[in-house]
Amino acid sequence: MTRSNPSACDTDGNQIYTAIDSFFVARVVVRADSGFDFHDHVDPVIVAHATGDGTLSGFDASKIARKAALLDEPDVPDLPAGILAALAAAGSADPGVDILDALNNQQAPSQA
Ligand SMILES: [Ca+2]
Image 1 (cartoon, rainbow, N blue to C red):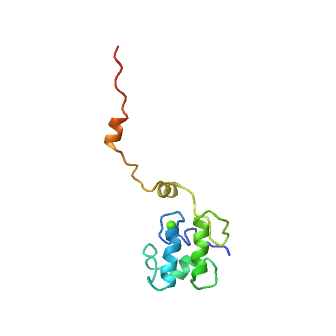
Image 2 (cartoon, rainbow, N blue to C red):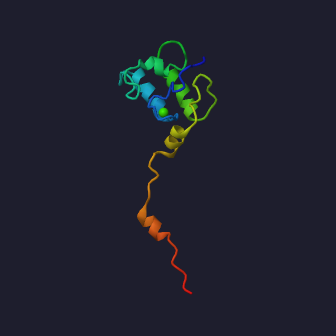
């Protein structure tokens, strides 16, 4: 199956596949959730039906989990690379600075 929407199956919209994407599909399958918050007004079947059969099932969740585990899963599209993917992989757009670590790692000035 070929998808035209590159963000398909990225249920949380963070531009990377993780177990959370699969988990969210599983929650919809068991009717714990009615859809995905990130894709608020889109039918969850449209977002995450990796199998292409027009329904959501554990098999869709399994395919997304395989993709998240970097296994070969041609039914789940690769996500576009770019700054959003890099930031998502880093865990945050904020690089964070620990002042105490910076001070502890600072070298003492040499004495001449
Ligand atoms: Ca994701």
